[in-house]
Length: 624
Image 1 (cartoon, helix red, strand yellow):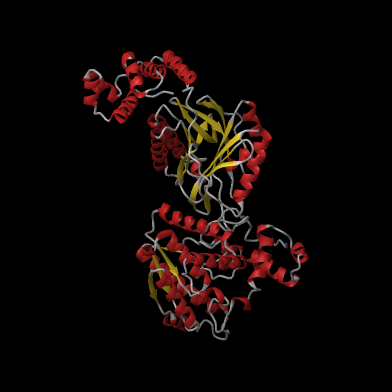
Image 2 (cartoon, one colour):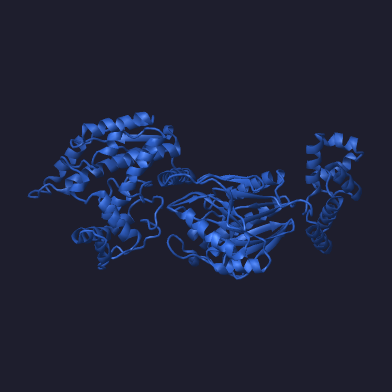
């Protein structure tokens, strides 16, 4: 491996604790020569190469070969460069076992310079700790998914510039593998970039997912070739994410002599997703009797949240290393790590929502915190807890906006939670505003009986006030609605649907209760009455949600079968549900597609979420 003179000199300083001046004195090295070594203007002489090898207690042949390679590069002698690179590859530190680090990072889409610096900085840190190979996730340079940024020539040009920056600044004595979009011969690929011995090689992803939230065929061309490279005399095969879910790419790299497989991934979180990954990879490992290193991205990106959970599996299908979930970390595989996945489903989902909310707000860099309309109900209570855990209580504001139908219990519980979480809490009575609206509309509504129009006015006034606070103080308004409500349209357009991000958008109402109970098990912040009492929008006297909807356990079961599993009405009825109820609920789902198109984004945690992956027509005569 190619190590430069100035890197050897740095190692001498570290080992001896001497300054350059004292090194020159002690080892009889001309000060002028030492200055050239330090600046990179000159390579070690053969005599000094042997001297440095002796001090560092390493193979002199390695230091001499590195010296000759450096001299060849300085003199632009390409034939000698090639010769000494081959000698270094043959030497390859015979006695030293391969040391691999995994960088489970949280990149930001489009932040090419920031992601580049992260790759360079972590590479240098791993190199200092003795790593031979550092692995990053899929599309670590661009972030995932870059979507239509990939269609901009300027974006691809910047990717190329940053890859060259990484190549120039990496220690030549280590190898680094990271994902990036690569444009070659008129085709764009989702690629793994291997920087080794100062050169760049590419592997192009072969299986491009085009389902759910994935639309890689819109942008990328599938690769055809296998990559197997050598590091410390170990033959390593490279795959990218979906490649491992099909048997042929893995079979191919094993047939090319790979002893270990590395898979770069940007695999989004979904309930029970990690168990699916382990099952698939174990099958591939046992088929091929080969070790497997799975490195995954972590962090929130719009509607997606990546959970990390990188792992290593030996050729018997046994997990030997398990990295944490929802945490950026760089870890050496020479050090055991076995994060026990003992979290409950509720804890895992809650952590996903917190990370998604945190990253959406912080990565956008537009807002200095969040504001929430706190109603005293379960949805806003859970949203407030998520916001505080994501951003810190000093960055969250809660606003209660009572009207004549707001119960004292709601006022008391909202204030109690705001106090327990130590957030800025304000009350704004909307009674005079509602009265003014009704007065202005009364001439237009003569002869019409009050109905949901007047109820929705309350919600729209609250939405307007919250958006004004958002504008004035630079805080994003978090929408508090849940998936069950959004499915059937039990939400007011331009009212409680107002906001910039909806943490509960993919959380069914029954799961909202489970998450609230989980959060209270950590420390008690949501008043018990909020969880125990029947849910109500409190837009009319004695109103409860089940005046308009079936019980939430029944509603959510129907919605899961219809929305997430895409079953027909007839099938759902056969599962024991009332036919009239099923037809009413499924028709409500279809009728309210127009509302969901205007709803804010929120993190996906289910098999089928409302948003990026659900593309239903707003105008349709389809009957399920």
